[in-house]
Image (tube, rainbow, N blue to C red; front, side, top):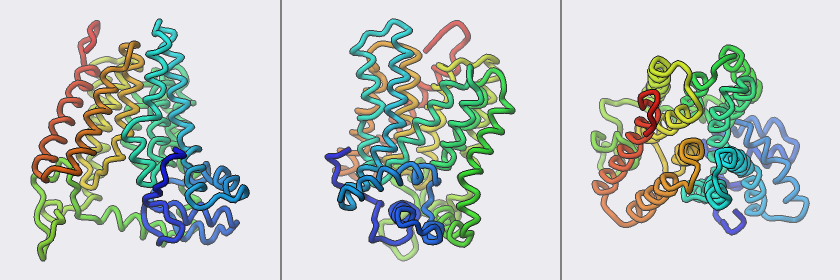
Length: 367
């Protein structure tokens, strides 16, 4: 984290864009609540509130803007750190050795996707991913805790709503309380900020949801259309927008969760985490504007699943990290559009099939 000098979207001198949290954090450090409400980025307030004290300490110690960003990023990385420690403890209970536990715990924090999220200015992505994975892990025994974690995830990045059905089916009791707590926690953080400046909230959301653009790392790329007037931009077919796709992702997640629940009424954490990884992989592939750092979510879900399913060296998680680095790093930098799209979709299909097999394997057998 401290060796990363990039800030990406995090720009105190920039404009109020959907991905720039710097203006909100600086406004809160200055005690200017009105300005903080007027520059709402399209990410929930939880990570911003979490980062403010750390950035404030860095400011008091004379740190520059990069140091303040790094301090806030450190706060967000505490989520993956906690997840890694928890998974290591669970692996120890299954007889895993120290090396396997350390590798898995470190992989939750140090992986190509998390490094990309830091470089691009979005340390809240690994925080949201850790919160969602943690909610699934504790849902069976502590549904109220799971609801709290899910609510914090929703107040960090709203894509966590896609994972909500998985958390619900992972709970064996107290599902109503789980949903209510998640809704209350999420609303308590999201609603006041939105109401403080409704125009700012609507503007930043419309800028993202009204987008027609298609990312090269999206499954929509092969059927995308050329933008009018030429250029390299590609658009969703039939004039569709990102807003039309987003509800379908939640419906897909809910459908898969119900299908798993009907197949295995008592869904254990292992199956639920495999389903979480599958859902988040599909979310990345089917989001028209997906970016490399979105893959932090499935990365941590795969880590959590492997810790529960095969508590040895996390070979599948390491393979997922390595192939993602190849697809999003080497190929994205050096090959043509068609090659990147083919490799990306092939990798998604292979790992999604593996996670689907792990989630939906017949009772009494495992993938």
